[in-house]
Length: 249
Image (cartoon, rainbow, N blue to C red; front, side):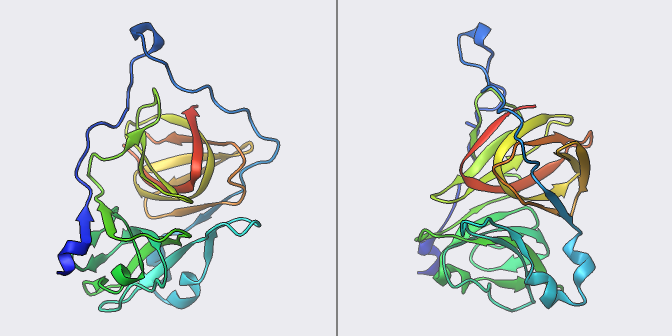
């Protein structure tokens, strides 16, 4: 009975990545948005593994949000055997460790569901699992999982290496990378977790190199953010608003 409430998204190769150029009769990528007057305000948080002492204080840190009351993302620690601490619709990326449940999850997996679904999952293994998570305004009726290596999602027109793997009323989850060296411009990104390799984020004129295991807060998601994948097949998942703007850098 429990498994009937759950579904796993099937791999989908229709990503829209690497679409032909206008010379092939199809539209090319969107023009990049103009540089904003305000800088994004990048805050890099270290790997959660560094916070195994004093975990409670770290788990309470707000990772993303704005002054208009938009949903906030948090770094959440889940002790072995403890249930997911969500009492409303939620979305999460597993940063490290594992989750036990009807569809076990490991680092790099994305999950979303409702409060009832959260109670069916618990920390697995001998160490805490760490998540980048966000409460959602909408009511998810079923659990859904996209694995780290699943070829699922919708591409952004004419842009390789980036696609949306989830779209909801107040959340778009963006998967970035590979290819190495790709450059993107995004407006609307709130937070980001680098799963492997590294990304460089430009905060005004200041570059920030973010390596695997680190998370990023974008203080002003409405500002224009420039990103570049490292030359080591970087992979990251980001939380954005309902309709982020994505273009080539």
